[in-house]
Structures are given as C-alpha cells and as structure tokens.
Image (cartoon, rainbow, N blue to C red; front, side):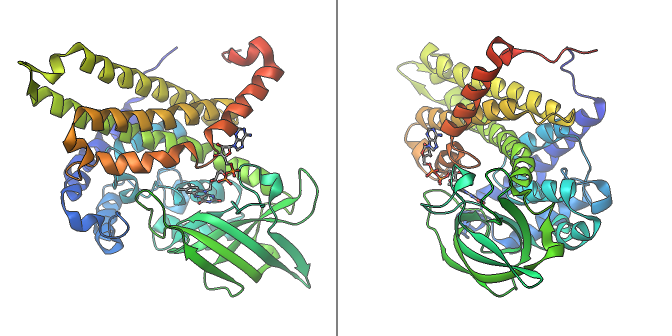
Length: 401
Ligand SMILES: Cc1cc2nc3c(=O)[nH]c(=O)nc-3n(C[C@H](O)[C@H](O)[C@H](O)COP(=O)(O)OP(=O)(O)OC[C@H]3O[C@@H](n4cnc5c(N)ncnc54)[C@H](O)[C@@H]3O)c2cc1C
C-alpha cells in the first residue's frame, strides 16, 4: 500500500496551508469578525474570497468547466483539513457546508441547463444554497421514509405543501434543493426539486436559535403553502429523491469529517502551545505524563479519523459508494472533534473556558457533529446491518485484479 500523496496534491496542501496562515488566521483575532451570529460578516468575507479565488484555491469539489478546481476527493481531504485550521478557511475557499454538498450533487446529476442555472452562480459565489430535507415530528428526520412534505401535480406543475426545519443557510440562500413526497412508494416516493428564494408559495417561519456559532443564514424552519415548481426543475427523475439524497450525503458527510479534522488539529495546536509554557508544582505541564497521555490519546484519535476519511475518499474516487466507510468516519471524527475541543479546554485551564481562544467556539460547534447528516446512532445501525449481512467479510480490503 502506498500512503504517499502525489506531488500535485502535496503542493496544493502547502499552498492552502500558507494561504490560511497569511490571510485567514489573522482574522480570528478581531472580535468584529464574530459579529453575525459568531461568524464573519459577509462584507468582510467577500475580500477574503476574492483573494482565495485569485490564488486558485476555490470550489475544489466542482469541475473546472463550471469554475471549480475539479479535484479528486483524496485531494479535497488534504485541502479541507488545512483550510479548517481556521474557522473561516472553508468559507474563504467556497468549500463549506451546505454549498459544498449542493455543488457536488448538482455537478454530478444536474442537466447541462440545470448546471448553468443553479450550479454556476453557487460556484461563482454570487449566491448561496440550502438543502431542504429534515422535518419536525411527526415528519421525516433520521428516517426519510417519514417525509410528509408533498408535491402534487397541478396542471403542468408541482405544488408543494409542508414544513421543514433546521435548514442551514436558508436565511441567505437563493438556490434551494428540496425533498418532497410525490408518491407513497417505499423506495421511489421522494423527488428532489430546485427552486429560487423569490418564488412565491413558501416562507421562513423562524430562524431557530441554537447553542453554537451559526453558519450564514442560520438554521431555519420553512413552510410551503403552494410553491409551484416546473418539470425542468426536477433534479434527476421523479421518484429519484432518495437516490439524490444518497449521492449528496455520502460525500457531504465525508467533507464534514475533513473539515472537523482540521479543527481537531487546531485544538491540539492551542493545547500544546499552552502546556509547553505553563508551569505548576515545579515542572512544565508538557512534562507531566498525565498531560502527555491526554494529548497522545487525541493525536491517535485524529490519525484514525484521517485514515478512515482518506480511505472512504479513495473509495468514492474509485466509484464505490463507500457507505459503511463514510459511516465509520462520520461517527469517529464527530467524537474526535468533541474530545479534542474538550481536552484542549481542560489543558488550558480557565483560559480554555474564555473567549480568548477559539476553543469554546469549537466546543459548542462540535456538539452538532454527532447529529448533522445522520445522528451517530443511525450510522451505527447502518454498520450493524452491514456486519449482519457481510459477516466476516465486513472487514475485507478490496483485492486488486
Ligand atoms: C446544526 C444543524 C444543521 C442541520 N442542517 C440541516 C440542513 O441543512 N438540511 C436538512 O435537511 N437538515 C439539517 N439538519 C437536520 C439533521 O440532519 C437532523 O437533525 C438529523 O438527521 C436527525 O434527525 P432529527 O433531528 O429529526 O432526529 P430524530 O430522528 O428525531 O432522532 C432523535 C435522536 O434519536 C436517536 N435515534 C434516531 N434514530 C435512531 C436509530 N435508528 N437508532 C438509535 N437511535 C436513534 C438519535 O440519538 C437521534 O439524535 C441539521 C441539524 C443540525 C443540528
């Protein structure tokens, strides 16, 4: 097995690293950059994005013909991890959720006309997007077969009625990908639709207050009351909604892992810097074995996460859906991020609990990792099902020809 990176990917990684060091990290020391729901105000983000674009570090997930970098997923893994050394890195390079997953889905399954209309502006950075799936109880959450939002045929159009919530970015998004029920068929009952924020027949009921820092546009509750969608804005075919979701969510879960690993490494960086200087009871904290055990434990958890993530990325690059590999990475890296922030706060003492470092921001943000894009328990259920079906072959390595 060869674990080395190609010279091109390694060169890219170093360019991202340098860009973050020079242009992104310094922004974290200005409190004004946490003004909008603890996120960088959009007018301050724009010049940073212009720099990233000029540096050729822009939309790594999208084909070159639509304005992206057209990279394989293995290269995303390196780039996203380096980008998210800073809280604002993925935003700077147009590789943050939910746009990242939406661009990837539209690139993969959109028609040429849909790509021109819906994808290109997201890649350009002139509009933001949202993915509209989850519903409040008794609708579809962990179990998409419970989705109740309906799309009914009215003349030559679809008419949407229902309610969704926790839709990230809905407050600023213009392009929406919506999952709605077009029949009661168990496998083919859902369809994915595209709509624009200016269309009538829907509204944002509220921006849901959350415990952590927010993505731009927040996490919103939406109501649909006769939104009309034409056939050319059906994504894939009628009945392909579940398929579209799977195509989007596999890579989207993995890009979360890539970014979370960057944040987990940042936590260790801040922890290491503190314990290297701080003394107590006659020695430096860094020289205490109990402190080393804490740091060493997170270090190996991060590396396990990187291996799981890179393996799943490689499989997706080979055309495999990597369902169980993505689930393993998602469960593990979500826990790792949470633990990395927790350990770093502990080792920084009272300073860790303050807003003098980004640790408390990361800690509150990290709690969502075990919920978004499938709660950890759902991924564990999926893994148990694979293990039941595959037996000892669950752990096979793909053998070459
Ligand atoms: C910050 C944030 C951003 C989000 N962004 C979006 C978005 O942009 N678009 C979107 O559509 N959705 C979004 N979501 C919703 C997210 O995808 C759902 O919260 C998630 O899929 C879980 O669904 P639910 O909240 O309905 O939980 P429920 O389905 O009600 O489950 C509740 C809990 O029950 C447990 N549970 C559920 N199923 C099982 C099982 N099979 N076995 C064992 N335990 C189980 C888990 O602990 C789970 O957390 C977001 C959520 C958050 C918190």
